[in-house]
Length: 147
Image (cartoon, rainbow, N blue to C red; front, side, top):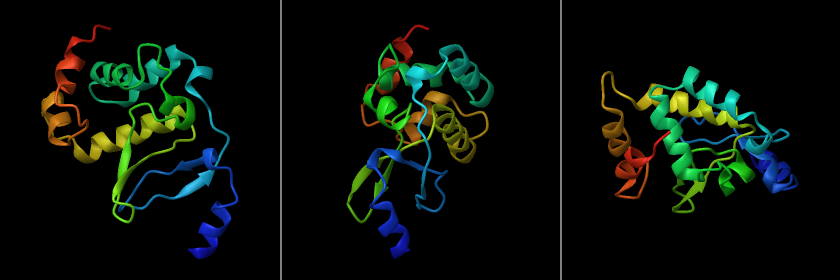
């Protein structure tokens, strides 16, 4: 483990990207990032509709998290469409995840839904239950976004 951390210290910081997280462990690997602004929006939208449950709400979340142009900082720097974060007990703070491509972020959200979403659960209630956002008006804002 020490060797891995030693090697990671010599890689450029913005080139880290996580594999799917299991058991609160983040494994980083180096891969050329694919940025959303280089990504075909129609293809991006199709991937959301093919892979995610409640894709319209998920697309609204992306717009709310990143802005109407889908050009937020977390997309540009980390391919993190929905601002996924994990809590670091060691640092006692949240760390924003890095993804090698927007599609890998969509895949992460898909696995998140499979693990956490209950059968026949209202999706807005699900987002509240898992505390997807810290903003108390998050659901109201999502409902007000017209696609």
